[in-house]
Image (cartoon, rainbow, N blue to C red):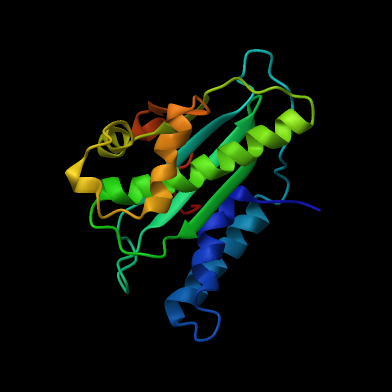
Length: 190
């Protein structure tokens, strides 16, 4: 049994066209298969790093990248003691009106995963340090989670504002990270 977080996004994207794939989808699929062939000996190795944080997350989104419906893709990645254990790449259900909104929706998904992972680790006897840090590279998004009275964020669904509640209770914290260091950034394998 194996897992490949490095192809999470392209496989999810190509999966949208299973019913009627076009020529460009076949070309992309062959590219993924060639990538897999060339990297079949790569494996995930879990090793506890002494100086790594018990649980840390990264959240990111691409804004309106799908030219057919302009919906964004959310992505997150979580590490336990420096090991990647959870990741997601999922098309958002609504059209975001700004990159900050798209990032905030991704942050919301990551916050839900952080709460779940934190509880799981607690159940396994691995106490996590609270607040769990989630790294985000969009300053507008970071501002939204801090500014409870933001008039520009009122249209965002209430389900996404639970991030603020978990920050207020000390379960989570959102930290800025440069885009080039964002581990949840969606890249297509080359």
